[in-house]
Length: 419
Image 1 (cartoon, one colour):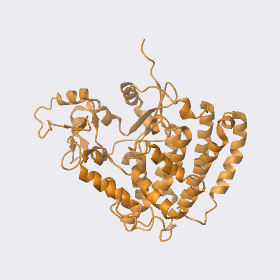
Image 2 (spheres, one colour; image 1 turned 30 degrees about the horizontal axis):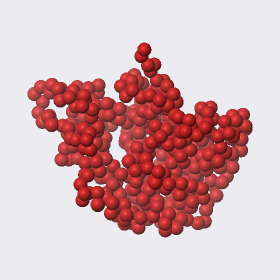
Image 3 (cartoon, helix red, strand yellow; image 1 turned 135 degrees about the vertical axis):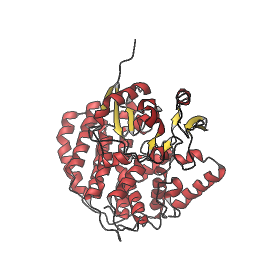
Image 4 (cartoon, one colour; image 1 turned 60 degrees about the vertical axis):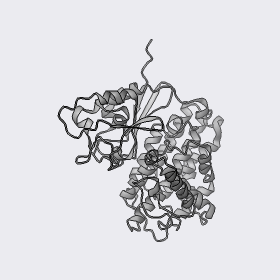
């Protein structure tokens, strides 16, 4: 008997249409199955010139598309920014990984799958094109091909019922939407505080839905009030070192797969050690990152020397949070099988990382104000590893998030200058 198809939920908040920037063809090492490699090798290109016949490489025992000397996929047409396979044969012929990007498909509730658009895609950052929903037929075919199954486990749900989880998510979503007129730092810190206070209530309380719904309005009002209070004290040298390492962990890129030599590993290890002291730049973690040193970026100046940004510059970041909540794609399969509140804390703490990354990007432009382009870079940099980092699957890196829980997170924002 055939298994029933999962119910597919597609984000209603996001839009996407490829803008032929070619970033995905340069940024990622694309995994191929042996069947896909054989199928692509058999394509009839006729008299087309310059078609790569040897287009695969093997990294750590797995097949990937080979990279050209320019850094892009060997099938990338550098003159147009388009995939030559796509141009010649159409979307359906491409490898599944290529067809799927920038959609992030993850199992959520049993028998259900959610789809959000990855914010490391420039087109998604701009919210360009038609709603994701218009591509439902193709998305559902990809879901079937992936064979996605399963759902949130009891451990991941931390004892909460589905109704309780969805009630908490609606409350957090409403908080973000209602706080649109607040400064970005206040809005983000309110989200963090609310997530932590829901955690503190415990599963027994949260599963009592009638009481929970009565408490939510007053809880959110207190959060809004408390989020507006600025802290006088920043973080010390040790926490600054931890923050720099944390930022670097989120900025690691696929380039590392292709450079497994001892020399490259030594360079990256030395860079990670240097970050603790503000030495070196994020460029070592990937070519898209700013080359300015972390010390020169003036991250921990409490905002002195920085002009506050326009609220509109942060619109892309709020779409990241709201889409992840809508998924919900901030725990479970979408985040290395982490429990609900661990994933929610990581999502809430992403503001500090985005702020720090945006400061680096602006500093490299010799700017004293964060603009939309800086937030777009930062959101793409952080979302690239939000649930997909090769480091953040380990407990040691989860401890970094624990380090910045409670009042220390407010002190971190104080040191970074809030915005």
